Image (cartoon, rainbow, N blue to C red):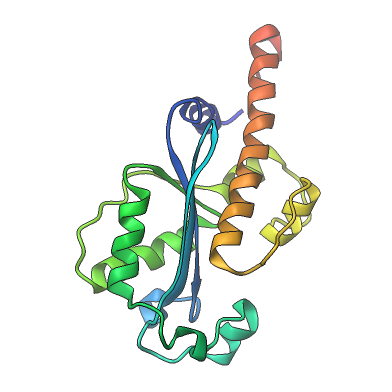
Length: 196
C-alpha cells in the first residue's frame, strides 16, 4: 500500500480537511478562464464541521459551453460578489485545514491564479488529489470520473457539476477510500506476512 495513503489515514484521525470544488468559465486559468463558483466542506473524523458555497461574478461573460456543463448563467452571476471577496472568504473558511479536491491540479491551479490576480497572501500548504487516492485504492476501474465512481461506492450526486455538491461527493468518495485503507492497514498489522 502506498505510504501516502497510510499517512492520510493517520492524519484523518486528528486533522481538519476541506474538500473543495470550483466551477469555471473554461479549462485554462493561464488563458484567462475564471472561477464562477467555489464550494467547500470542512470535516474531521467526527463528520462535517461547516460548509461554504458562493457564486462569483468574474467580470467576464460565461461561455455557453461552460453553462451547458454547470448550469451557471450570466444572469445568475449579475448580483454575485466579486472574486476578491469570495476568494478571501474561502481562504478564511479553509484556515489551516488540509485541502482535498477531485483532480486537484485543476482546482488548485485556478485557486492559485485567482490569488495572484487579487494579490492576496494565502499559502496553500498541503493538499491531496482524491482522484489519485481513488485510482490507488480502487485500481482497474474503467472510468474514474466523479459522477461514475461515486454511484459505484453508493454515493449519489444531488446537484452534479455544482461546486458544493461536487465537494460533498468527493469528500464521501475520499472517506470510502479511507475505510478501505484502514481495513487493509488493520489486516496487515494482524498478518505482517501480507505486507508486499
